[in-house]
Image (cartoon, rainbow, N blue to C red; front, top):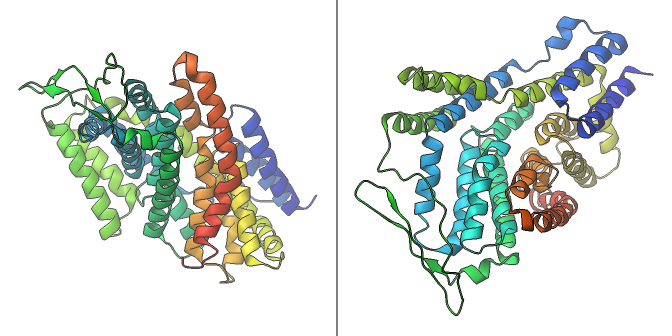
Length: 441
C-alpha cells in the first residue's frame, strides 16, 4: 500500500471510528499520525510533532479561558438578562433575542455547544411560557450560535482563518464572518415564518416590573389580536441586576479590547486573549481559580490532532492528489459543489471542527488555479460543514431536544431529524449557489 493510500484510508477510518464510538477524534488523529507516519511514510517523531499547530493551540486556549472567566463571574448571565429585558413585551422578538445572544456568545469566544448549553434551557422555558414553537426556538438558538461562530475572534473563525493561512491562501476573515452570519440569519427568518412566527407578531406581554433594588416583581399578562392566551403562563425567571459589578465591567472592557486589538490592529488573538484573561484573573484570583478547568481541552485536542494528521497527509502528497482528482472533473464549479457536500455530509456524523481542519486543505490545490474565488469557497465550506449541526445526533441538536418537556420530546426529536435531513440536502447547495456560483467572493 502506498503512503498516499495509507494516509487517506487512515483518515476514513478515523472519521468512522470517531462517529461510531465516543472517542475524541483528535486523540485518534494523533495515534494515526504516529502509526502511519512512522510505519508507512517514514517520518520521524520530530517531523510528526512539527505539524502540531502551536499558534492555533494558543488561540483556542486564550479564547476559551477568557470565556470561562466571563461565564464564571456572571458576565454571560448579565448579557442574557439584558437582552431578554430588551424584548419590551414583544413576544415575536423573543426568538430573535435568543438568536442574537447565541451569536454574540460564539462571536466572542464560546464554542457552539457551550452557547447552546447555556441558552437551550432558557429558550425552551420561554417557548413554554409564551406558547412559542419549541422547534423554532431551538433552531434559532443553534443557527444563532453558528452565525456568530466565524467572527475573527471566535473558535470556528480562529480555526478556519489559521488553517487558511497555513495553507498559503489569502485570508477573508471579515467576509467569512458576515457570510456565515447572513446565511444563518436568512435561514432563521425562513424557520421563523415556517414555524409560527407570524402568529406571534400581534401578541404582547407585560414586562415584569422591578422594585427599587432591581428585584423582579413576578406577574405576566399576554395580549393578542383575536388570540386566546393562557393567563396561567408565567415568564421565566432570570437574575435581576441593578448594574454591572467591577469584575463584569472589566470583563466587558476586556472583550472590547480583544475585538479592537484583533480587528483594528491585527494583534495575535490568542496571545491577546490570554493576556486579557490573566488580567481579569488577577482581579480576583480565588474566584477565577477554576476557570482553567473550563478551557475547552477536548476541542483543543480535537483540532490539534486533526491538524497534525493533515500534516502527515501533506507530507505524502495525498492532499495534492485528492485536489487534483477533484480538479480533473473538468468543472471547477462542480468540484467546489462536491467538496461542500463532502464537508456537509461528513460533518453531520462527525465533529464540525475536525471536518474544517481536514476539508479546507483538500480545496487548496484547485483553489490555487484561480478559477474559484478563495473567499467564496472558504465561506461555502465553513457554512456547509457547520449548518448541519442542527441534527439531533449533534451536541447542539441533542441539547435542545433534551430540554424539551418529556411529553413533547419525541415530537421535537422527529421534527429536528426531518429538518436536519433537509439541511444536509439543501445546505451545501445553497451555500454553493450564494457564495461560489456568482463568483463575487
